Structure formats: structure tokens, C-alpha cells
Amino acid sequence: MDLDQIQSFLAVAQRHSFTQAARERGLTQPGISRQVQKLERALGVTLVDRRSNALELTPAGERFLRFAEDLVASHARLLGDLRVTPASLEGHLRIIASTTPGAFVVPGLVARFCEQFPRVQTEIAITDSAAVLGAVQDGRWEVGFTGGSVSDSSLHAADVAADEILLAVPAGHPFAQRGKVSLADLANVAFLDREEGSGTFQSVRSALAKEHLALPSRRVVMVLSSCQAIVTAVRRGLGVGFVSSLALADANAAEVVGIRLSEVSIRRRLLLVCRKRQSLLPASAAFVRFVEEQAHEYRGESSGYRSFGAGEASDAV
Image 1 (tube, rainbow, N blue to C red):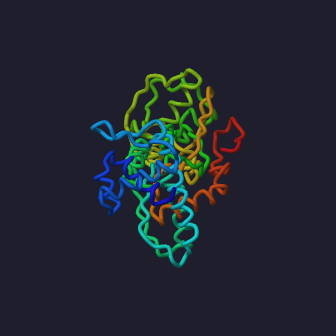
Image 2 (cartoon, rainbow, N blue to C red):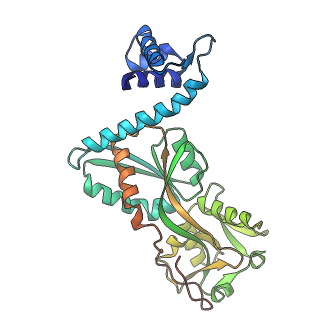
Image 3 (cartoon, rainbow, N blue to C red):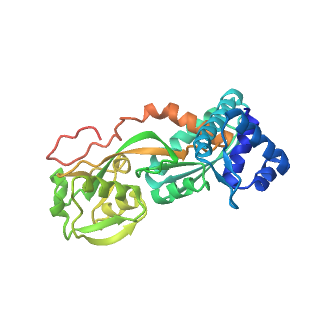
């Protein structure tokens, strides 16, 4: 059993065809078939069911597939670690991020990374959390950042930053002096909502659902696509809305105040995501390793935001 045979088996398993796998690997169809047969003899099991019209893996083949994917991915990472130096790494790094990590976490990480690897060219796309996960799941983007939860077992998620969702209100609003408000207080208040795919909005709903709670009927006056846009609208007195504490870190406390719900604290982690069994391009692989090494600098850090109203001493956000 050697790596070349395992890679041929993976191509057959992924394409469900010896012919297509041979074309992908630059081999003849008999050649790739012999490699898989040698692998089967070495293992003492049948990996591919050749009796049906549609090529399928046997139960042993399905089990070996998971091992093979992990082995090939680990091999690629090892080669990347051995070969990559700041002077040699080049290429295109494409990152897709939801609005909160895209605005407040990713730029700093990319700037540090590019200081070490100046020949890498970076592209960053900003969208909502749902779109980030979809783009990484289907392989259109290799690296993503999200403020939403990740339940797909095919994705690797690395914790990179702490965050808390607060209710942003104008400094002159009656809520501003209270520090906390109840869900009932929000009924019929002019509200600024995020779009449905927002990780911020998802975090609010998830935190409430865990306590068997839900947002009351609200008078939604506007739907906005970023925390910064909501902070701007709040500052202009257009309503109140949930935002990341990171978006309030630089806000003028004389204009906008962040307060908590009395029923629940809405804390979350911002995550890097990539596919578990995909061999990343060198620049992407190096960036993922860099972020995971740097993540301790973000974990548990507060946003620096300390204005929660006169009625409450602030704790760490």
C-alpha cells in the first residue's frame, strides 16, 4: 500500500468512475484499476463493488475512505509545513467572511499574515454567515469566517475571537440609563433588524431559544446588512437594534449605548471555517495555520466596550 494507490482510490471513490478517475490522475483506465486492485490485495478486503452499473464502495471501502481522506490531507499539510518559508510562499488567498469578523477580525489577521508572507495576494469578500457556510461547503471558497454556529460535520471550525451581542440604543433613549431591558420592553419599539442570514441575528434567536424564549412582536422600521449600519441608524435616532459589541468599541458613548437583555446573556465565538478533508492551496493552508496559532491573542479578550448605562457596572464583554 502506497500513497499513489491511495490517491487513485480516492479519485475513484469521488468520481464513482474508473474512467473519470484515470483522466483526472493522468493514467489509463486499466492502470488505475490495477492500482486499486493492488491496494485491495494489500488490505485483504474489497473496497469497490464492481458488480453494479453505478460504481459504489463496499462497507470496508466507506471505512477506508475516511482514513484515506485524512491521510492525504495530512500529507499535504506536512509538505506545506516543510516547504513553505516567508520568502517562498506566494499565491492567491481568498477569504469569505460574514460582516462582523470581516470588519473587525479578518483585516488585522490578514495584515499580520501578509507581513510574514509578503508575496501572497489577498481577496476578502463580505456577506452574511449563511452564505459563508454555503460557499465553504461547496468548495467555492477555501477559507471563511462566521459569527454563526457551525453544525456541519464536514467543516473544521477554529475559535478565533470572543464577542457579545448587545442592544444598541441612542444615548438619549429611556433604555440607555437602565443597563438591561426585558423582552417585554421591546414590544412596539422602533426596531432595526438584521437580514435573515445574519450570524448576529442567528445568535440572538439561538440564545433565546435555549431558554425557551423568543423576541416579541416588534415594529421593524428598517432591515440593514451590517452592525455598522445599525449603529449609524441608532445614532440618528431611527430605532434600536442588536449589534456585535465589537461594532460599539469605537462608538461615541454620548451618542450610542449598548445594553443587555435581562433574561439572557448573548455571547458567542467568531470562527474560522474550512472543509475538513480538502487539501487547501498553499497560501490558504499557511493562513489557516497562522490563524490557529494567533487565535490565543483573541480568545477571551474583551472588545474594549465599557458603556452599559448608568445603572450597571460593566463586566468583561
